[in-house]
Image 1 (tube, helix red, strand yellow):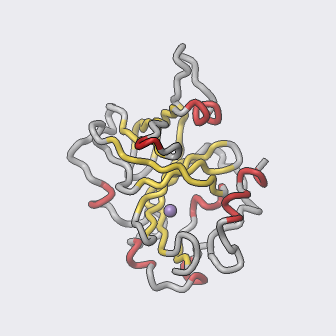
Image 2 (cartoon, helix red, strand yellow):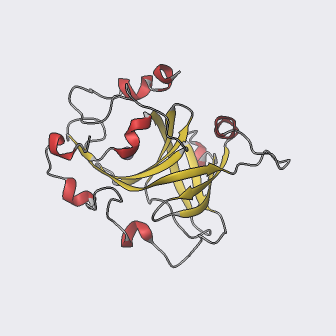
Length: 204
Ligand code: MN
């Protein structure tokens, strides 16, 4: 149930202060989506989220996703987020959890390609539990398959690796997290959102 999956999200935030969505009115998308949000908090990172059932499974990726299959990016699993977080942009007050600005760096439909080892697609929730997820992104900036591996880097249970699959979307020369900094929803850079009051920043 959504209430259970979002309990940690709600416990970590004061929703009367932060402009982040409560998730109360969240509806599933017609096709499951992925979203990547750039988050200029005390430690700048990219949040990669996958629509799995009634919430967004989420990872904080310090360096962001790479288009180079040779790059393994650390992806730290964090609490599930509400489905309506997917189009959230705004400025979280500095004193609050995750204080700092957020933009939607890329968003689009997603297809689950996770193979169960016998040529059958494993449902996403089972794929997550198995620690191996392969998803196809149809974003504006990112296209192709990415693999999430529960590698427990450094013995940390929340540490996964995010790796580009070697397909037509792979390109070792691209560095879109640096060269394509603007929100695909508002055209703003994360720096442009910094001093905006929450009411202005919330795109509703
Ligand atoms: Mn974040």
